[in-house]
Length: 329
Image 1 (cartoon, rainbow, N blue to C red):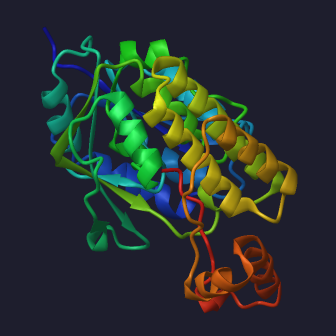
Image 2: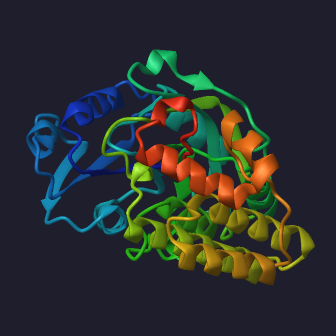
């Protein structure tokens, strides 16, 4: 019996500065049975040309009109032949033993398991990535994993996952209606098709953050609507499998964090998230913010402090350490 084939699904949009390095890095993988499906999603820069310079018997490059990341991921899945799947962004990297260590850890692709691993965040140089272990860096059941992640606001880099084909097929693929934090809605559906999440400490991935055009940095009205939809759907997904006090509180907590994050920009979305949080039992999670925000919050309350913070932003005081970042953890 031949060794399993791993399919790397790589959506690429306006990432000409990074995609070449990402594709070059794949050649270093110790696991040799892999294929990469690169889908250029209607880029307006040189992404397609750069990617095509790396085409080979194992790297296929396709192009399409712009459809968004979720639809692009689904096309890559449809084109792929693998027994296992990895969703790799076009600006990220994997350690040389990432695929081998995870394939060995899972073994049979038909087993109801999926693997994850250590990950580090970097800005320009992956050699300077910071690896910070969290409570998710261990073997867990899917319900334990999601409850822990949502209560503690922890994230897992999307490329860390190794997903068997049968598990992926049962999940239904990516939701094209969601753009911002689409992984927050997708991966819980996948996880809950398994019996256990296997953490593989010998494997690592490298997550690039902070560059212009990063999907997680979008803050349009449409993006916020997408984020709230992802939170709603993922909550329902979990509670359909395990509706109990711990899971309801985890859902209420992540929705309350959304309220803290979006207020006062879109009061209707904040109100909807608050209603859902209360529906699930509510949460007393404290709003996050810098020292200036926290001091002000103690005097005028968090809502007024957030409004004053927004005024400060509009005046250009972004260097004061008050900027908040949404995290899909």
